[in-house]
Image (cartoon, rainbow, N blue to C red; front, side, top):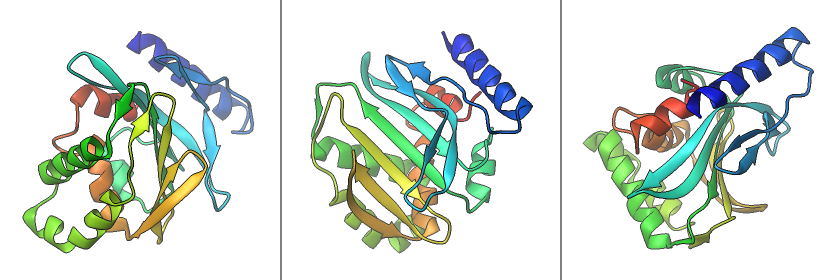
Length: 194
C-alpha cells in the first residue's frame, strides 16, 4: 500500500509539473481520509502535500498526519532549513484522545528532540501551546500552521484556538514528527514522501 501512495503522489507531482503547476490532481487517500494535493493558508499562501501517513499506537490508528509545504522536500533538514509556510494536519481516527493525552504526547516529542537549552528557552511557548488543546474525537481535524516570520496557529477545524510566536517553536514542534527521535520512523518517512 505504501508503494501505491508513493506512486500516486509521484504521478500527481508529474502531472502538476507537466502542466506548469496549474493542473488538477485528485485527492490522495490514506486510511480512508481524502487529502487534497494543495491547500491555502489564512494569508493566501498555497502549500502542497509533501507526504502523509498514519500515526498508530499499540495497533490502534490514532490519526492521519499530512505535511503541506510551499515546496516539496524529502529531508527533515530541507524542511527546517527554509522559513516557508508549513501546515501539519491531523485527521483523528481514534474514538477519543483527551487533552491530557495530547499534551503528554507533545511533551514526549519536545523532550525527545529538543536540547535542554531549547526547552528552557521555549518553556513559555510550550506552556501556551499545551493550553490550547481540548479532547478530540474521530473525525476532528487539527491544523498547525506556520507562516514565515510569524507564528504557529493552532486550528480545530475552522476555529483558530491561538498563536504561538516564533520559528524556533515551530521547528521544535515539527521535530515531533521529523526530528532525530520522531513519534515513529515510518510516519517521518511518509511525511517526507519517502
